[in-house]
Length: 173
Ligand SMILES: Nc1nc2c(c(=O)[nH]1)N[C@H]1C(S)=C(S)[C@@H](COP(=O)(O)O)O[C@H]1N2
Ligand SMILES: [Mo]
View 1 (tube, helix red, strand yellow):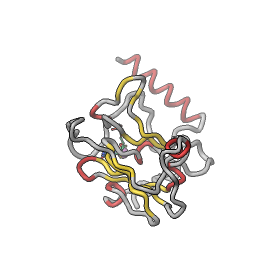
View 2: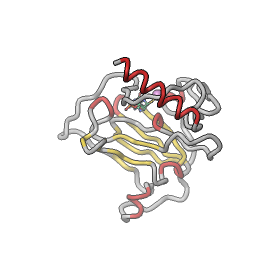
View 3: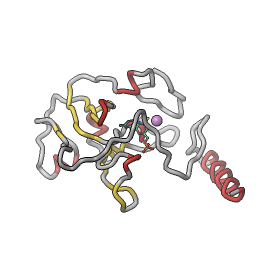
View 4: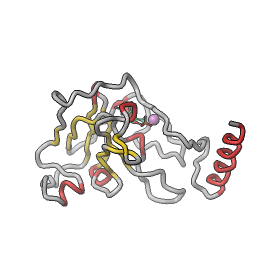
């Protein structure tokens, strides 16, 4: 127990010195559950997942399932209970945006978004270009909406910063 705490602390210090840990943040070695509202029940008989016509994601486009609509600038992820989050299309078309069904070889747990969630980006090192990260991936994903204009999602409307750059400590919009 105490050993684990000390190990985490020293790992945290290493990460900070390497410039990977933004100010005011701490290192977690767990997979915390962070969302608003309850965990939905999954019923395969009634569950569906919609992608709007004329829109695209990198692999789906590459495999020829969807033809990109050049007018699209933003994509809204729609999840259970009306939760939404918004991202520029180029972010969702990047290699590190994923409609994830599994984590560490196991189906994603209900808490983390079963049967499918968005997983986006990474926390960049200081000085890299802006890359959105984990919080912009909707758990219990049900639809993707492709739009010309941006539309703030659930947390974004609740006052959180649209980009939330950790290095700039952008917490509120
Ligand atoms: N459906 C849904 N997805 C969500 C959220 C939420 O409240 N509802 N919160 C987001 C935020 S702010 C974070 S930090 C991550 C947390 O993912 P985790 O619970 O798997 O760690 O989920 C994101 N996706
Ligand atoms: Mo979050």
